[in-house]
Image (cartoon, rainbow, N blue to C red; front, top):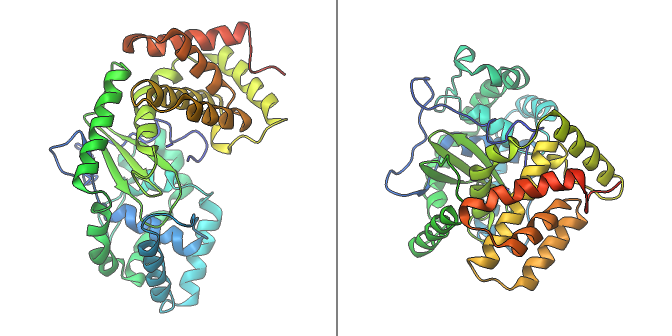
Length: 356
């Protein structure tokens, strides 16, 4: 996951964006499916802004690459018509506020009104997000300026349907069936009404961002949706992140933080997972996704074990601990998280994987 985030902010709690009675426009979304696909002009504008002021990532030989390349060429064609002073202003802002991931930008952008105004009322932000507004207070006016100078409305009109046509109907049904199977496989008390998928059409990387939009959950996918298992990964995050975060008290968080620091001395850990809560959530989610792929989707165990070893080599050593425990016990859906919590508690007292 889905790729992640400025500090720990965009865990499940961090993206909480209330949609009723707050003055923030609702996401445009269909109403019939558990898994829905949406196109949002604010998200499109934010990604276009980052694509212009930074160097976007791109992996070669991926589906839709030609369309993405054409879109970026059009962006840069429009950029030539913009005054150099405006471009310098955008880049200066991004240099001090954008740190390689879209989650913070998107959280604030989805609080804004529709383009071209991107209106935002700080008094209506929840207290937990005021610090984010203080850091990014200049983002709405920058996006408004960018939107108008680059004529993003014309660009959006030509590419909006592309966002919603990335997946044929039969593949959408297949993906919906996978999510339904996943919800039967992992039992949690809190479920979101729908999972909303918003492709971000400027990148081709296996990465995603999850934001809670109670009662729905939004997954913005930086890469080609449906080419990988990123949707499953992000849905598991939505399901289990709040539960896993509750496992940590001050003592266990300190213990895990010390262990992660020790692991960093011999392995490079993605900076998104250095905080104790994010580290634990990511290890749990990956172990559950691998166990789901093996048990429900009947993928070869050898392929799963290779992924587990890759994660362990990358410092996510508890992925292997959790996965092997699930494979050993083969718990019922109602007991999956209970077994993982017990395994985590055992690791604190008899660590097998996280030694100094």
